Length: 116
Image (tube, rainbow, N blue to C red; front, side):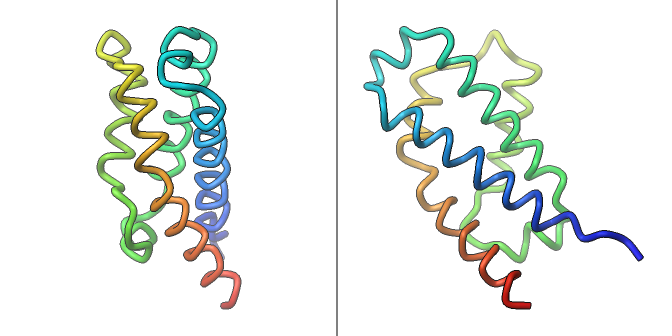
């Protein structure tokens, strides 16, 4: 019997995403971009988010609609391997604007799994 790690990965993603949203909610874009520690923390959280997404099976990802899986995993790869191409303003906008819908999808997916 294999252990189903999908709920743990989804919960990890939700935690990372909520931390990202909290960071940008507490700072203006200008203050965020000027703060190297916040930049590094945000990069790490996006890397962790993408790593957890990558660890899900294709079937598990397909079962959760409303999540741009390819973009999340792709961003992780850019941040982990292409550090010279990081645009802090784009990371801020992504965290501020694009993660609410992903959060909603993850909350729903975890609720559905909990009912099983």
